[in-house]
Structures are given as structure tokens and as C-alpha cells.
Length: 303
Image (cartoon, rainbow, N blue to C red; front, side, top):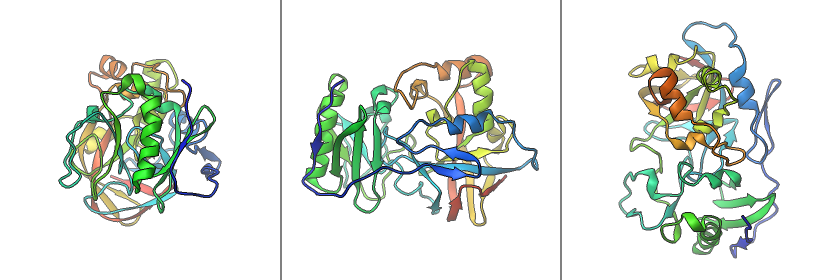
């Protein structure tokens, strides 16, 4: 689909995009390149380790709901909070009823999201923490940029989505935000955790490569047996030296996981494969932070 370059009146310097992160000989993807490395991690045979100890292999945030994942080398986790900047913004798909003065959970169908708007995965976006500048690349070129704190910046981003998602809109797209609010798929402020061994097992069931980023998790863990995470519901998990999370529930998967995060093509029936193979549609767990601190790629994860 052709796209039009739109820009805010805020002048910013060049934005070359993030560089890929490295963990030893493992290469983790930036948001501007193919994300094959987590697939490779998921396919590896886990290194033998104590039954309850694993390793944090990747950290991701999603500053705008439905848009690109952003890898982090480390992050701060605070009690009762999400990963900083995670789902801080959303793009309203027609009137949603969201009130920034009194923010409350709303179902994801009120916003642009991958379950219904697969073409979002074709985009490569980058969010700057300090300026709140969102840069959008489409068809290998910059298509829009805007400071989401300013009316002009939000309008630039909204104009882009008005064209890019024209046939999927129920009304004018609108950038939404409220202080302290996260546009998560659940009402509770949580961190999502993906077990890479479970993704590898699911890949065997699907008979095709399964990119772990289909599950849009925050913390990707290596070293647990496949599906071990489900046994942790109700228990506590420690990450690094200080952080503890209480595991509150399993994550039920929707049609968003059918979308290839690199191409935007809806190519795998992940929920159907889960249900047919395992008798449920779950992959991953939600944890509520109960003790805060810094977590970093390479930290131990102990249950």
C-alpha cells in the first residue's frame, strides 16, 4: 500500500535506528531488521541447569500498542508497574470511550492492534524516551514522525494511520495516553514472560518456524523445560539480585499470534495449533512485580 510522508513541526536530528544487541555469540534483533535470533534461541537444546533456574535471554517493550517491539539490554521494574514505557500509547480505532482524566482498562478491539490489523507488522517504528518522538518507517523509507507529547506530533502520526489503515478504520485514528496508564491486554499492571522452550515445542507441533516475537512478551527466558511456566502460577519468580514477581495467570493467545512479525502476513494458526496439540490456547505467563530493581539480559531467573 502506498504511504505518504507526514511530519510534525518539531525539528529533530537524524535517527539512524537502534543497533542490534549482542549476548556472547547470540545476536538479538533490532526493530529495524529481521528478528531471527530469538527463533534460533528457541530451537536450541537447553543447557542443563538446576530444575528451577533459568536465564533471561531478552527484554522487550512495546511503547505503542500494536507497533514494533524494542529490545532493551536492561530495564527497571517497580512494584505494581509494567516495563517502563510499555504500551504507554495506543491508537484509537474510532471512538473508544477512553477518558484520559479517568483512565481505565478497555478491550484491545477499541484500538489498532495486530489481531485485526496485521499490516501494522509491516511497519518499523522507534520511540525515543526523552522526546517521545515516534518515527515510522514503511516500505524501507521514513513515512512519518511526530512528538507524541504535542498536538502537531500526534496529528502527524494520526494522518499516517488514516491512510495506512484506511479500509480498517471505524473512525478517525487518535493517539491516546494517560499518566500512569498502560494499554495492556489485561487490567492489572503486569510483565509478560515467555519460555523459549515452550515456543520450540510449539514450533515442532506447528511444523514450521515460530518467531517468539509473535507473542510480544517482555521477558524471554531460556533454561526451563517446555511449559514449566504454567506450574509457576501462584508462585514467585526472582530475576537477577533484587526483582521478584508473583505469577498471576497464564496468557491466552489470540489471532495476533497468527501474524508474522517481520512480514505482516497471517501465516500460522497459532491458537488452533495450541488447542489441537495441548488442549488449551495458552503460551506465556503474566507476573506482577512485588519487589523492584534492575533486570538485565543474562540475569538468572529462579523459581
